[in-house]
Amino acid sequence: MDVKNKIVVVTGASSGIGLATARLLTERGAKLALVSRSKEKLEALSKELPESIAIPADMTKPNEIKRMVEQTMDHFGRIDILVNNAGQGYYATIEKTDLDIFHHIFDLNLMGPLIAMQQVVPIMRRQGRGAIINISSGTALMRLPNLGVYSSSKRALAGLSLTAREELKNDHIVVGVVYPYITLTNFGKNTIKDPQGEDRQPGNSPTPADTAEYIALKILEGIVNGDAEIFAHDWMMKMAKGGA
Ligand SMILES: NC(=O)c1ccc[n+]([C@@H]2O[C@H](COP(=O)([O-])OP(=O)(O)OC[C@H]3O[C@@H](n4cnc5c(N)ncnc54)[C@H](OP(=O)(O)O)[C@@H]3O)[C@@H](O)[C@H]2O)c1
Image 1 (cartoon, rainbow, N blue to C red):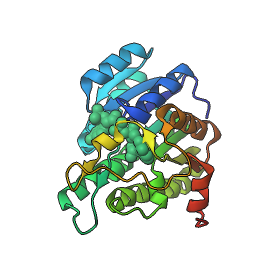
Image 2: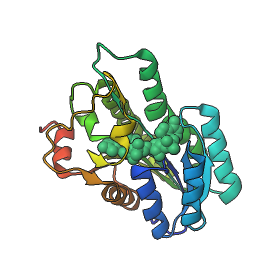
Image 3: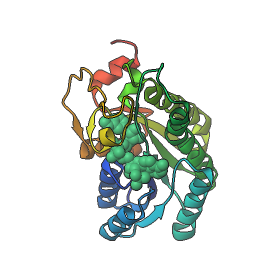
């Protein structure tokens, strides 16, 4: 789908990949609903991006997700594209996994996108078409120690996305999933860590870390081409096919 003049909801727009995506899509002529918890950051960004609106919402709270979609509809009257990008990491072994943190990670990385999709699908169906991009992670394709909970949430999100793609194809709603790998954002700093202070392992990446702007281009590519799966790098595609 071409993004010019389209109404796009980007969650996690206050930082990193979401911020870069909001800027890029605005540059290409889209009108943005900017969503995250940080009201001040979103309002400052909204001043920078013409015709955008700031909608503070916590994506772990179903009522706030519903209100966010309603506010977008009240303001713009339609939603063409949803980018489910808000997310957080968790670094702990399976043995040491805290169950409250497990629920938080799944609420944010999986339930939030699911509820947002449930809210926008009827709107897109009425409009005759739509595009949904869910941001998974390259770790969903791997077996990295300490990232079991995070990577499981992202693996589940990929599964949900590809199933939704099949279910919605006759409604002309195209669902795609993007797999970034290590990207230079606040993600590492915001990752919940056990033991406290220990950072996530970078893994043996065959490529250096990406910029958020590079991943934003991949997200745009996914929207424009309507691909099912968009990988930050070709070597990740081999992993998805079980070749690595
Ligand atoms: N960076 C990487 O290496 C990497 C690799 C693979 C996948 N990813 C995925 O890419 C996505 C974006 O991450 P990033 O790298 O840009 O990290 P980031 O810089 O930490 O940004 C995360 C964004 O999510 C928002 N967010 C967090 N909790 C939220 C909540 N409860 N409700 C609403 N918004 C919330 C944050 O905004 P507020 O704090 O304002 O709420 C922020 O805008 C995530 O889904 C992440 O899992 C990242």
